[in-house]
Image (spheres, rainbow, N blue to C red):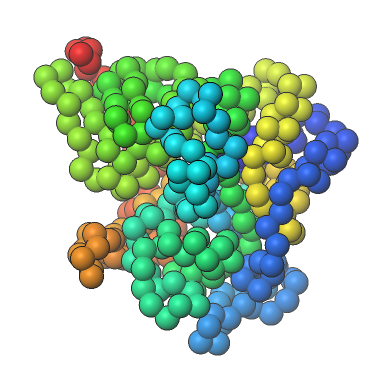
Length: 355
């Protein structure tokens, strides 16, 4: 999801002309979000939640937030696809659900920060008056998901970006794949993942299998060990993948600046965005921030609970500090920063190979 934003950013930075506007104009727009997106700085009063309580003052808010959503829509999936048996068809798995939800914070003075919201996070769903897992908010549309993040977590959302399974694979393939380094052989029989220890280039199929993996296993030389953290482990791996994808995207654009046209076409045909987001304007800002300051990643503290017979995650100790940072009302909570953890996650690979 962040790969999309950075891909456009990198492309826009190395000589792609505004002639690409026609392609960008064909990007699918999500309408009727005006009432849930926070006003941009200088463009109106602070937004309020359902109770009438003001969200952070838009005039002084120090950043803009993108809600990045990975949809599990199978629209366009073909029986000829390599992973068809794993992913399934649109007929078998219809509709759209949010498979991944992230908030990207763009500082007004540069710098990017990323936080993932676990799909099983137990929150009040906007407009319903009851609590459920946050990914169910998407069933009511992008507007309900945005409102839920804004109202239940206090985070104003200024822009919206969505990509589905097929679009994600197409973008990764157009990038030429993403090099990922892992310490142990890994697999997930449910998502179709199968990786060797060390560094390798993931194509779109394997990248999707890695990003979706919730039953991730590592080979320690004697046996396969399941990552019992499920979605929380997946979030950590997604952050690792995002950092690798950013590095790979920038390297490709530097080495082949005029090859960005095909990448723009792939992105334009694979995403849905809100009506006011200007991809080129966002591109310049995001690309500059990535190059100058990199991207910081944070985890949201949660605790597992059983509620109404459902295994869910509730906000844990320290979550208020993380939410305050992304809401623009508090400093960066360095205790919950994972940037160094994800960067170091590839060390200490064992010599034993998987069977």
